[in-house]
Length: 241
Ligand code: NAD
Image (tube, rainbow, N blue to C red):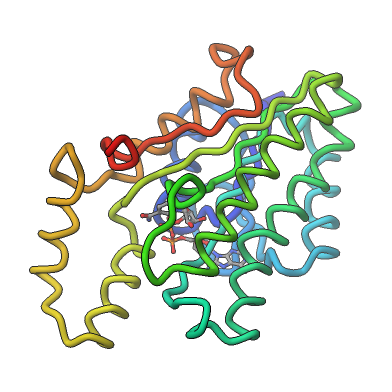
């Protein structure tokens, strides 16, 4: 029987690259997303609905042993604390944090029973440093870093590892959406902003989703069996500055 990997937000960007890499390595991959995708086994799921996430993951657990959870679904929102309404704050937290809570909580019974499991939470370099105009997103990603650490401590006794991946600026649909929103608000030129973003990175370019997927795959593998509770930065050197 194939090993099972559950990915949330696997229909686009980083999540899609993760789904493809685990499929290529002979995993059975379940993708929980609001948008459909043809890669892996698609489960229509809104991560903000904790009951729905629980039911879907319990069903998956009946089909095979869930070895890996990649909690990746997330949204970006631009705004200082004053420019973030309560509804916007709740939307970011419901998807980025409550969605991860739902996914992690739901895979733990199966992982405990089999005394094995790897959980990877998609945080951000913004879990480590703040970026301007990114109040709710910064806070949500710092929360995920904490979730990785507390999960690692509470479940090490069951041989379950939990780590957070902290990507810098990765060229995905989410990145383009964030730049488009900024340009629409400020009137800035997208080509210029894109070039400026690349120049801000010590390696002089943005990251690619496939590069993040490789790190996630490594963390899920036995090669990383002594790594837990860690925050793994993949940012072209951005946070080293
Ligand atoms: P993306 O927008 O390309 O993909 C996000 C996926 O999440 C989409 O498939 C979307 O449908 C899904 N999703 C959104 N809301 C959902 C919900 N309520 N329920 C289920 N699925 C939902 O974004 P991406 O750039 O690939 O980002 C993936 C993750 O990586 C996010 O958590 C993001 O915060 C994080 N991240 C991205 C970057 C970057 O620069 N792109 C940097 C650091 C961290």
